[in-house]
Length: 538
Image (cartoon, rainbow, N blue to C red; front, side, top):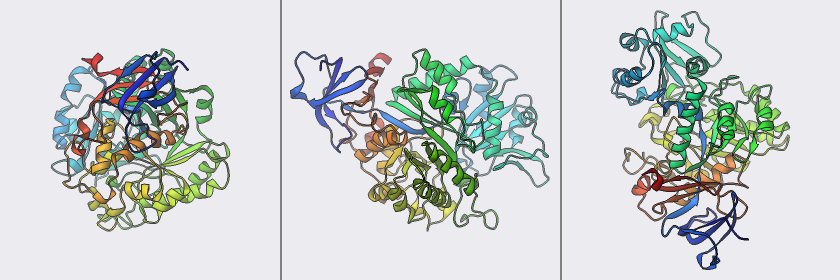
């Protein structure tokens, strides 16, 4: 078969083995038609020879939140981590200067665990600096909002306002609102806050984020529902559809809206979105929160418990979750569940094991999986449940696992090596905007158990759970394709699959592990078409 293009390199990682070989990849239309040794490439083919540059399948981010990732990377909002509450308030100044007077100031990224003084902020500091502008500061873990008084007033929240199930409007000892809003209550407020942005502003934010993804070597993403509440998942099929219709969608997009008791909107999305570039692939639901806020659901109380029996709780009653999953199984629809605490993982596995016997299921996945009960590692693998994990979460809160869970439970946190050895499939992602989308930063952390920015802790955190570079690359490609239910179309370089590929300037299989984050992306191809070129950017 005469190809449209042949891409050849001395270092081709197909994902079918653990090594890179001198190969050529033939492309016809948007798919790979053959993969051959360099010596077998016909003389009349149009060949792009990359020399020693590293060719591999495109990276697939198995878990991100597209709307918020695009928004916080755009001029409409900003990312602020800060060293303290006061520092975060100071860093709002550039955003306040560029946004029209009276409009919302929206930022994301703060983590009180990383501040000089580890305590939750309050509305008071925001009120002093911006008494007349509504402000919403979204936490780095995407589970908490920090609001000022003007924002609370515009949102209609008073001390007597009842919080939605699974959420909280925090109050001080005198019953006054502190400005901290947690979990479901925070999710419920976000649509009202972002309503001030018009569609074209949001489309521009999406375009910019797509360019950033392609420049990072990302060819596919799973856009995961951000809230358990109906209508608040921020899976914006309207924005994706608009970009697709204009020919501006250059990242394969897989939508996972919220799983609800009535099935949710997956069925209608599947009916209208079934192009290889844009599909609705399954449901997503939350079973618990996060450990840092003591909302992850544990079997035993937190080591630094705030109250007796402080062990979190399910965000959805187990019997309700089980019925929703069973309903999805009857419809042949995939389910992915957010589980961070060990009891959430355990109960979700119970539900999946029972569901597997009741119908035909494309796939199950569990998201985040931070803290296991020891026997559940093998249970997950045996059940064929995909472990959708985010390597950079490991180092987000240094000392946090020991503080929250204690030394006895820490060895069973993010156990990547143990999961692979048990036979589980890992799917890597970033949970963006919680962490950045650079895939090689995640590969570095999985391989070294260290943070890609700080290169800490020395020797790696739980180094016995390190995995190899090849295993990490496979988790970020074939594993993530499985988490989207598209392993037969994506994730490896072989005939019949889509020609989604990325070119790196060096081989991550050969460089020192410390050099992995510094490897540069040279080109990104989606369906055989160049979506990014480093030379074009210069």
